[in-house]
Length: 272
Image 1 (spheres, rainbow, N blue to C red):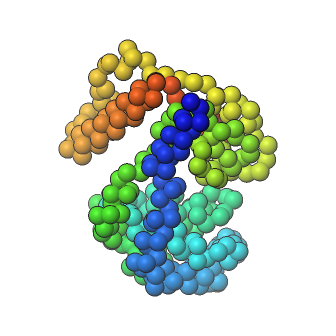
Image 2: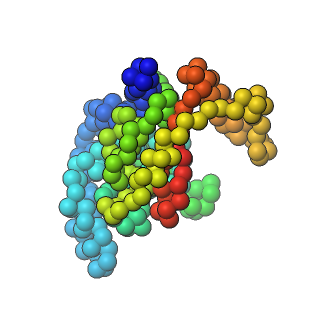
Image 3: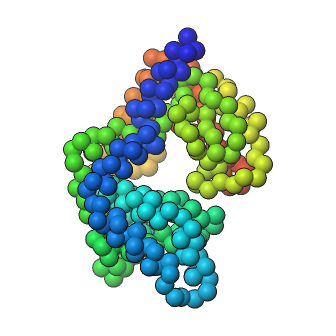
């Protein structure tokens, strides 16, 4: 039975994991805008070599130690799949982990600069503060995804709880999930090689849980007023998706496991 559960868990991860869609998106984006990806890579190299004040030269110069082609490709995937309008800070937070910086603030600053480079070659649009609806810098997606890509993206979601006992977490870059090969044990995608208390993670991961049927029978209600149509739609989407997860867990004998991570201050959080 345990092997069957592990096989079913692997199928769930393959279906829903955002990590497992990267290969599909990479092929799609590289075939769609190869010249712009190449231009962005060259622009990043030029930006890294551009004379500036000492601290900035030291910061952006670190990019030359990375694989700039991979950075340009990762950023292209983020921008091609970007829908709607977003504060530049939120887009920078998506780009930053791909730059390889140890200091998250350096990563965010550099990511913001690279987003402006991408705007210069029409990979996205930037609304300046005096023209934006919020009075701040906004990044606007400019690409329309194909129906096939939209369907694949809509299928992915944050991985639900595991239906089998998680794998043992053995180092700072491992996960209890069966198909995640490299996953920082500290939230925020920034990790380090110093000693982390992994035995607590493994103890928490190994605790079997179940849905309380008394709570499950209660209707889920919004915690805030749904005073706009968008808020109403978002709540109903969340409610329906949650109901699907609950039902899936009930169908799996109502036994599941939550994986855990630390934040940068050492506090423990459950995942899924």
